[in-house]
Image (cartoon, one colour):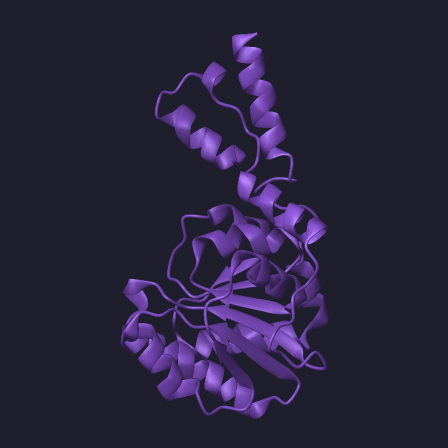
Length: 217
């Protein structure tokens, strides 16, 4: 999907003639969905800036997730210009804590998991995305959405290197600092909005087909 991924393969001894950089097909699916499907109705207040959040990784269960939810609670209670949309993972370790911390907060909308089309359009309507998801770190830069990554490390370093994502872990102070800065500092926000995704331009599938056809041609 990326030059960095290709270099990793070459460093492992894979022949250069066998490695092709095409981008990731997930970007093809993302852009095709936005082009074809109309935006479904979402449970959000369109007069406010939307922060879309996902949080479900096992390493964040317990105290780390409490830190995340505490940060979200503080932002939502202090800022009337912001609304959170959080499709809650059904795992009880996530769901029970999410409703305990955020269920009664006016600026936070908890909902059932969204299907792919709904989630893609929620990303597109968002101002910022907070997530511990790997896939979101690839998708969000392709539509110019800054990502606050709720992890200590990531297997998608290209997004961080490109400046489209920032690792904050699950530290409440770090989350507050980054989210508030992205809301208040227009230049900082604009710097994280990518014109091109590090994970492809939406033509990966066509490139893969062409490469395969040439290889058997």
